[in-house]
Length: 500
Image (cartoon, rainbow, N blue to C red):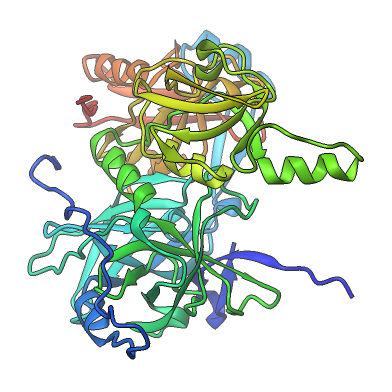
């Protein structure tokens, strides 16, 4: 009988008592310097003592409880058939006859884990733990509790950065996951099923593992240390108690742990956290190719009865080269095999993804590749999804309670839009009070077309200087439905984050 496995996220949904698997200026704060992953026990056949690691790391792992709203029934809106005419006539995003009917939305709660990175309260966790949170409660290992606020979210890597205002915190020591070895002992620390401060042990089963799950960026550490619902965002540490990964998901037939757990390596985490702190959004550097593991390509060709000899047996096979991308500009072609980036060996697609996530648009990298069984080296400049080398900012107007970013070209094409900025996260504030939810796409503000976050900032500034100090917002849902909102600004001022 064919067996079906499920890749499951690890936050615990607690609604109705059911535990289920659920699919200020930061300049003064610095992350702990990455450490080596040298083992405490170095004598062959000597018993491994993991008590030091558990004692060192446990106080750096927190319990996170989130409360959110069921967005699907949060609000029903009724539209006048003359909305377009009257909306434009009055110069407001909402016609006089259009009404919003608020509905009491059901609340839901969930739980997960997080890891303290800095003494001033920055905590890393999984995006899926906090992405829909209205309120975040962080409980430390000494039972103190604090309200958390979202600094930034990144769905592609399933990472999020939150912050609490607290003292006497215990930041974890961060090690480089690059130094992990297959078979090395690791501990998973978190709060599975709401059981706080739980420590399980296992080994590193594999590295740079791709699961073809929902996340576009995948290069997981695989471990057999028991990881269960509620472990999401918790720590994977080495035998020295140093952080090497953030626990994210399990691979299971039943939804419970069966020996296959996966963590996001610190090489990816470090870059994402720094970007979220500095820019409010992750600066994603793209090579501009579509590809696969060379071994998979060779196997597929052999199944067709073809012999393949490309001069190497490992690497990333280039299946397509994107037009106007970094790879095309550097001369890479379909059929090339990438074997190294900056002299770091690339054996499979997961290795390539992990290396690219440590870079920003505009960075130059050295690429070693094979073409017709001959090795070549070229240097290229990485680009962002819009095909440029600039860093893309997110802006957060704190009293409005929303983080915004511009739609990229692929999103515009998918949604059938020429312009827009998307609400990437939402919390208590004026936008939420107006009924705006995460994922809403703002297309016009006070008759201004929204092409960038800067357009929104200018609209807020202009409205602040006007007599009525009101934002009339036209927007669309992800499914294409029209929406209109009204926000009275009061003392709100646009506040952006400067690029560094």
